[in-house]
Length: 344
Image (cartoon, rainbow, N blue to C red; front, top):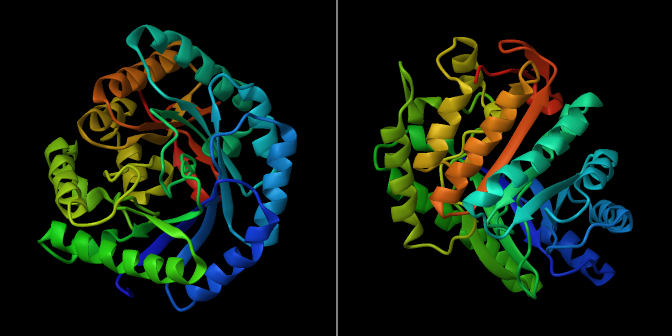
């Protein structure tokens, strides 16, 4: 597995239980030797309370895991969720909508915009990176912030960081299948020892900084919808032979991809391009930085994203960062580094 990394091993838990702490620590021992970037926890859909978030953070620290995700509902007090998530660096959250009719789009857009604006006015861009709106959620995926648990038993999920590995070969579906199978075998071995089920792998192709997706999905004119579609078809083909969960699509998180950032800086990529890509086959619109110069335009942008989510008929993640910067400005985003604000 040295040709690629395991982006995440995520344990989906049916509940927070101290009885699981030793098993979670043993999981890390069982996986020793594998090139695993992060260990993560995902909880089931929950009614928001500050006590729950505090309890979850304490549990995460006790288990010595990197991150924990909690799926909430749009009906919860989302500003309170934002405040609670901002207190703990290891806690992420998703705001879930089980279905989306077109007449609900304005109301949902306004509610999500209110969350972004609340955090913007406090200068809190990092917390915006830790909360996603999940349409047709909760989603059984290892990817954060949308990760969640929907089973009655603990189960294992995995995700890969394997863009450089995929660039080296021409038979994308076969390379995806081989990488996914290798990760599944690791999860199965660990699961059999611990008594955990294996939910599967999310074969989504997602970048990290210099390991950029640009070479796979773009040409001199910007994003190529055909290239994205072709890559997604390769994922689809590989998934037919594997146990999979989650999105299983190309992902284009702007703040996590230095190649995408450069295309935005050059004016080749604009906000609307990310929406267009999500309409074809990308898992959502992710970590795109927007300017507060024109709030109505931002609200309309959210509506456009939700219109795609409505039409697409699949789980769809939306994670935007609403900033005080103007288009073209660079915003510091902690571990994501400097990221340009897009022109819509």
